[in-house]
Image (cartoon, rainbow, N blue to C red; front, side, top):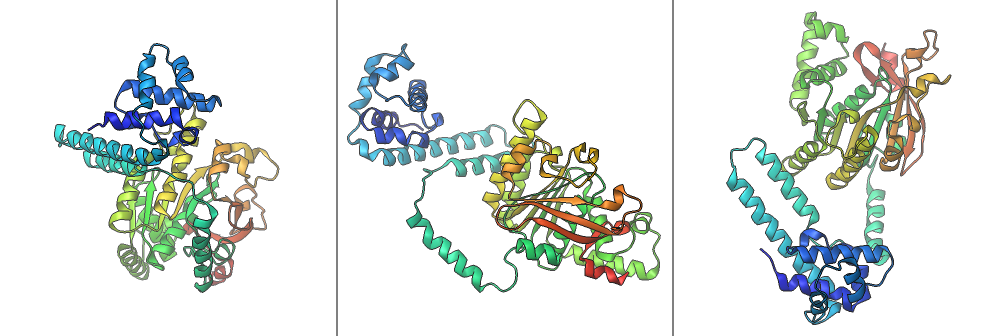
Length: 419
């Protein structure tokens, strides 16, 4: 599927109208089927970057092996350069049709290939993302939408986002909002536990759809953790199966509650590409309100030569993912050892590995700290600090919560009185 005349007409606009050159980023090389057209687009983009006018002579200087008469001929293909955006839309439509044909051939060539369905789903997602013409919107278009959102928020009783199960956290964050959320900490601080507490609470009490991607623990271990948190039975008893009749009754009751919740767990997905594909499928088929990735440094297929570059690449793709899903995406992250070398071992944003990109991408960063882990004589036994180190749309600060180590569970401090 190709339209050579349309390709020539679109390129010809650059030679006749500087306004078309300003919109050159609407096009990609994949929108052209002839190599000569790809070269012309690439040369025109380079000229724009260099702040050099795009004309017959400057294009020829970039690709001197090309017949200059071909470049001059592009001008005669254009009826009106003012129709450039319309030409781009038509060309994008042809590109989409060509990709669909290629996708159909991919399926036909090897329909029994392993993971073909996942590959096709991802191809379709990428096709949707790249289709159409991306535009910049002015304030007149957006202001009514913003005012409607503010007015709608005013009508909502209680918190706007997902109920985390923690009263003070909900107050500070107004519930868990759609966005890229980092929960960081050193080993033993409870970063996975607090994420599972939030997931369990919102899935069971709020009937939310939750997806958990566990790259460290098995799916069975995740469910055992949730049973422990839900029953408040010490982990040692559940892991060993040494339970009395009352405890077994609690376990069966909790198991039934979790069984009937919308919690989806996978422990065999390791790449950000696979995570994105699974999330988009869940959103389409069942709905999706919260995603948890445990943990960030184990996610694969990031681009770059170094570990930090790969982590930065994965972080960017998580940022893109939450925008597509329109829900909170929590990534649990291991912090570097640098905090343990300080007198005050409370973590900082700079303790994230590859911190520069992570600090930039995330909407919300919660750093977990338990003083009793480091100090045997700590006055804060059974207390953890959830340090809101970054909050793009609200306040930062430290929230103290209770921690039941034997149940790997966090609670509001006022609920610790039951002990």
